[in-house]
Image 1 (cartoon, one colour):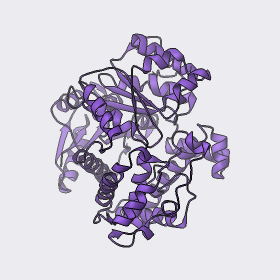
Image 2 (cartoon, helix red, strand yellow):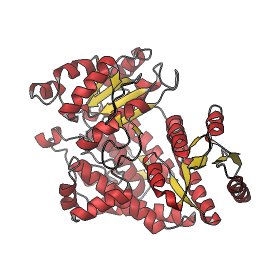
Image 3 (cartoon, rainbow, N blue to C red):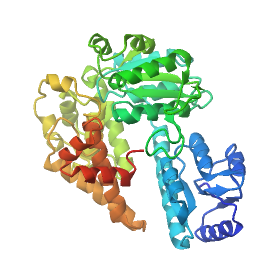
Length: 493
């Protein structure tokens, strides 16, 4: 495991934390100023960074911002005085894992750092597992065409438009295009930044894309870099581009044309060297005819188009995908991988999978949790697979982004929430609670409650396109409650 880095100009703080962490068998490296941290980051990286906010030679918040540019997944704990809570809020907005108020209780500080280490190791294991598996699977001719296109584009920075139904794997293709391009892991290791333009409320999307200056609007306490700046030297993936508000399409076109943009509230033009890959499940030509999408932006994005086939168009890939998803689910849950009988596999191959590959992945996770034996028989499959596949309705055919559930407990977004699906969700909840309790994590109740509430509100806001009052009504809570919860959980950042 990598060492814990502690950055503080106060020698006593460094000494106390170093001794306490060393007793807990952690390796520790101390720094007296942000400059030394940034210099060390050029050749090394910590498991967790613990940094004071106010130090000579630079602000801890500036350090946080620079560290997150280089290592987005690195947990950073910010230390601050009680009188500096505004800075603590800014730290959270900048991506801090947690803040540690001074003077702090040493055992609680060590426990907080241990929790950050556990989070970092979980992310690392997930990354390693993902790296070990093939990027994409598919023997069907349509998928082989996609693979060949990715190969041909491997030395290009050209703009690509990826089309296909929800759940077909558009982001996987975008990541592969980046990874094998001169900007990706095969090249200069530039960042891959993804944003779902349909999942962010209209009034926040501009700031999310282009950033904002301090004081640009209520709540903008610090300057924030947008996704274009974060993706400098790399790739920006704009998912569900067909849902982008019309006025923002104009700003995006200007960036794609001359590479310049302004932060919200800013007057200084900025430039970013970014390759744009866009994706949509919608018919953009029809959106242009309807006046909902700019024709000039469409032509700017539609330089190279890749269409991903629906899973029902590549049924021969279902066995390989199912085996891979069952193995991944077993690895994630720490159990032995289950197998599909020939009869069960035949049933799967007859199913239309309206949610495509994502639905098959969710179904395999559900089977890993719910199937009673290692060999999965047809009777173990969920009811919608056993029933004859119904024809898709017009409403399902134009299902908006996010309508196919990404939660692993539900094998299909179109089905009602069955007792079995609820049981699977509760089993996963019990497993997570058991893990946290055995690890000695403090305030398990609060931790899981925050995750539960945050996910509920996030999904409701996606469903209502950011309309809070409507989301509150659908959830059965008051408008003041949802506003308070959004602020408490940091969902408006």
